[in-house]
Amino acid sequence: MTDAILELAGVSKSFGGIQALRQVRFALKQGQIVALIGPNGAGKTTLVNVVTGVQRASGGHVLFRGADVTGQRPFQAARRGLARTFQIVQPFPRMSVLENVMAGALFAGAHARLADAVAAAREEIEFTGLSAFAQRPASALTLAGRKRLELAKSLAMRPRLLMLDEVNAGLNPSEIDRALALIRAIAARGITVLIIEHVMKVVFSLAERVIVLHHGELIADGNPRDIAVHPRVIEAYLGEKFARRIREDGTNG
Amino acid sequence: MNARHWQYLLVGAWVLALAATPLWGSNYIVRLATIIAMYSALTLSWNFIGGFTGYPSFATAAFFGLGSYAGALAQNAGMPMLIAWLIATILAGAFAAALGGILLRLKGHYFAIGSIGIVEVTRLVVGSWGSLTGGGNGLNVPFMTGGPDIVARTFLAAMIAIMAIVLAVTIAVDRARFGFALRCIQQNEDAADMVGVNTTRCKIAAFVLSGLFCGTVGAAYASWTGYIDPNESFSLIMSIKVPVMCLLGGAGTVLGPLLGAGAFLLLEEFFWANFLDYNRAILGAVIVVLIFFLPGGLLNIPHRHIWLRMGSRARDPGTAA
Image (cartoon, rainbow over all chains, first blue to last red):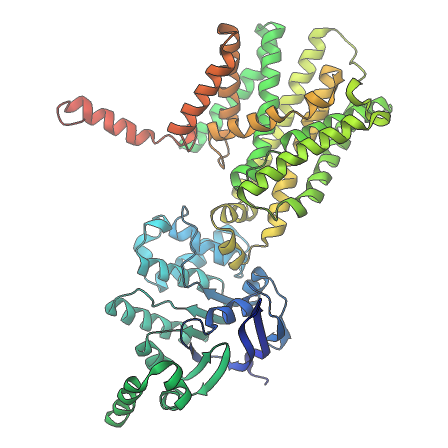
């Protein structure tokens, strides 16, 4: 309880008659990389939206570092150290890459002065490998570049918890490998990372713990090996063929 | 000296040119200079909400009208002129703050329509509240003592001073964290919220800045003309002209509003003088052409690109088509 950075206590969210989240409860420990998986429409993005205040929970509580933050607005979440990236990237299109990242440092990071924010932004741009594009407009980047920009912007906010909503969707295999290395480097900085993923290669090579949502319900929560053989997860999401492959990989390696 | 220094030098020269008109020009010229300074202040004001923040407001005339009535009533109650202007400024700002909390929940077209509604509502309220405002008969304001030359020079100086204050505030906002926040909101409001910008507070602050000085200008205008009525004070034409001027010069830039207001009013004056029958039609056509071909405004003409093309055409007339 004391080292839980984020705790969801029976969080529910309904849209009219549709129950997007039902009584979800789990806690994240500081410094973990946790994956959140589940079929399309399982409520993964809704969960991130509720945690960051984009949508308001219909029931239950969200606790961040011990404080109840259930009704917070997105900018408050950002200032508390709760950052997220969007499945559909959200840059400031006509600003340069540098200015985009500066925004994170300026309003949520610890840098109230423009000059300090520039310095902090340059560090994150370097960290995410975007240095060559610092002065280019954000709209000129490729999709992989824009996803990196989202990461750099989020990191400039000096987050304690970073939620990555499908940062690997739409990337090719070599881009995914680079993204994997980057996420590992982020976690090495002591930032707790929650990744929402459909690419199982990412989930099983990164996460130390996997949480599975199905129809808004938490159906499994445990280490990747156990999740891969969990009957409900196989039925709802992974499928028998994939589960067998994971098991075989496990016995081989 | 870099480009920025040159720009400020040009602005200084422009302000001096406006201020020097009484030295050589007739009262007609001085009046034109006063009007240019007045509209420059209004356009710079609009730029805070419409340019930096990207919310297309048509509420300018509401703030201007409220300011002119507040100033006139304060002066009629026996207050000194400058105090009356101050009261008008504060009232217009307070009105913008109260209104912003409601109106800024709307976006895009809906916000634009809502802000037009504000102009109409304030006009009708002021027009119907006969016991206080004189209703449709309008309101007389105590004239300044002194000859017409003194009056003309005083109000030219006043309008230029207001313009200079709004310009100074614009420069400060442009360089500050607050200005950066407004630009973030303009480009992607949800993303701004996500990086920690308190969007509601920033938008309201920008709206207050956009209303504040319109109140001052309105009160100064009332003192200048000595008579106001609801239809002139709350005129929708003003609410449309001001954004057009800003777009013409370059919305969201520091100097665009000055350039736009100056260019628009000089063009308007030129067409009034030369084509009395068709002036509005010609002006309308000019606006449409400018907005179609210069969507970023006069300040954002890609001049480097044009020079390069002209250069390549001059060198090699055969290939450039």
